[in-house]
Image 1 (spheres, rainbow, N blue to C red):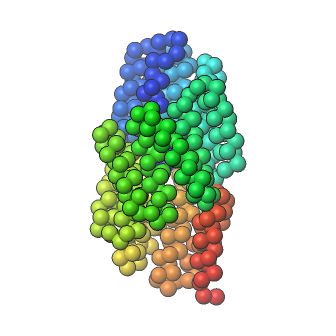
Image 2: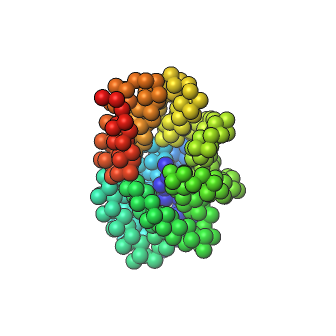
Image 3: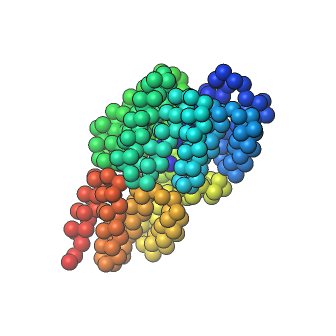
Length: 355
C-alpha cells in the first residue's frame, strides 16, 4: 500500500519525439484523474481504452507508461498478479521504444511486487537495476522514489536508522523539487516508521502534514491510506474513539473503490480497536474476515501481521493453543520476508506462553 509510483505520469505526458493521438492522451489523462478521485473501475476502463488506442497508434513510450500506471492501480487494490502482468508488458514496450527511463520505472515497479511477495533478494536486484538506469536517464524523481522504496526494505529488516535516513533523503529531494504528490507518499512511510518506534507525536504531525497535501490535491486514495495509518497512532495513544472514526472512514472509502488491500488493513485495525476495548470475540470475528480478505493479495507481510493480531486476541481470551498456532505461522512468515525485528518479537511472545 505504502509503495507506489505516484505522479510520474503527469510529468511524462507529452515527452518523447512523437506526439500520441490526442484521443489516447485524453483517455490517459482522464484515467489518472479518475484514479486520484478513487473511481477505480472507471479508471481501469479508461486505461483499457487508452491502451487499445495506443496499440493502434504504435506509440510504445506512452503505451509503456499507461500499462505501468494501470499496473500500479491494480497493485494498490491488492491485485498483485494483474499488476505484475501489466508491468512485464510495460517493459516489453519500453524496450521497443528504447526509453531508458521507462525501463527504469518498470524495474522499480517489479521490485515492489517482489518485495510484496517476500522475494527480498530479487527486490534488491531489481532496485539496483532501476537505480542504474534512472541515473543514466537523469531521472532524479525516480531516483528519489527508489531511495524511498529501499527505505521500506530497511524498515522491514529492522534497520530503522537506515530506513529513516533513506526516507529523509527522499523527502528532502522531493521538497526541493516542490513535488507535493511524492512528498505525501514519503510522509506516509515516515509516519508509519515513527508509529512503529512509538514516536506518536512525530507520527501525528507527519501524517497530518501528508493529509493536508492529499486533501489539497483531491487525492482520495492517498488520503484514505493516511487516515488509516493515523488510526493506528490513535490506538497507540489510547484514543480509541478517534481511531474507530478514522478506521471506519478509510474502510468505507476502500469498500467503495473495491480496494481489497486497504479493506484488509482496515479490518486488521478495527480488530485491534475491538481487542483494546475488551471485545475479544468481536475482534476474532473481524480478524477472520480480514484474513479471508487478505488471502488472495500475495502480501506476506500483511498476512503475518493479521496472524500476530489473531494470536494477541486468542491469548487475551485464554486460548493459548490458538495463540501458539497463529504466532508460529506469523513468525515463519516474518522470517521469510526478512522482517527479523517482528519475527524476534513473535518468538518472544511464543516463549511467554505456558507450556
